Length: 358
Image 1 (cartoon, one colour):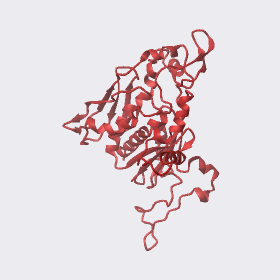
Image 2 (cartoon, helix red, strand yellow):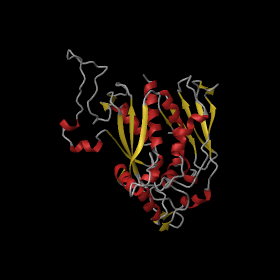
Image 3 (tube, helix red, strand yellow):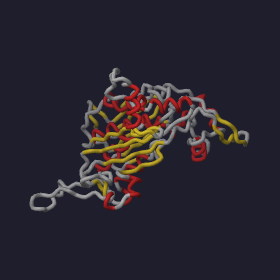
Image 4 (cartoon, one colour):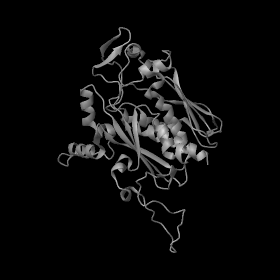
């Protein structure tokens, strides 16, 4: 379905090339100052434009339709839409007969009996992450925790290695002043240039950290913090994996290496539970599905973009034969470049829902 959450419910709607896309938020805390300008910062982080992102540009201007009065949330359902203006639907006519490898063209037609809107990927498009980012802006205002995410790997190259190459190129003799905060498209320029040159794509890994989280959020088993965050994160198009704390490395560790010992007690030796916390964070801030007071830390793996310019084989349902497909249109060489703010939004949505359930 298109709705997530129990007490803070997020419902998205629309298609990539339809009139508009949007979100309805129910369970919004009343009295939060909110205007359309509040969305600008996070929306700009998701925008296309830098190297490796799609040439399709939209103004992405939010229109608040309900749930705000005199500059404050009312507590009633909050509705926000974004108009689609820069569409080229003709690029997608092929895919009804020739589904793109790795894409949702085939499964969408099966699921919705060929009545689905294929233009721009329709309801399966990454464009639907824009209303998610808008929901995240509201969710961040509802929680008292800091949620931040950044790219740590692109095309198999770590941020540290890419930064080292960038600095070496930017400061060959120490005579060129380095930028304080180069963007991801600059840091991984060589990786992206190669993918673009080959008409191919690359994936990436995003790391997310949530600080100032109190101990006690979440439930064991099905509503564990990891379960809920994973549920939301896997709703982002292109996600292929998630790991918390030590993640998959924990499988090669011993218990003495992975365990998080506690290190706080008062002078009498009695535990002060309000201050006790693990001294390291191999569990990523969660034990038994419940937050332990340490930062929540997890990493998300994004696949290479499915729509690439390189020729691929697919099945042609019109002719009944395998044929060669070269995909037209405007696509990202690396979708991961634009996803940190989306990961933040999904995480904030989960935490806002958990907080509302307290």
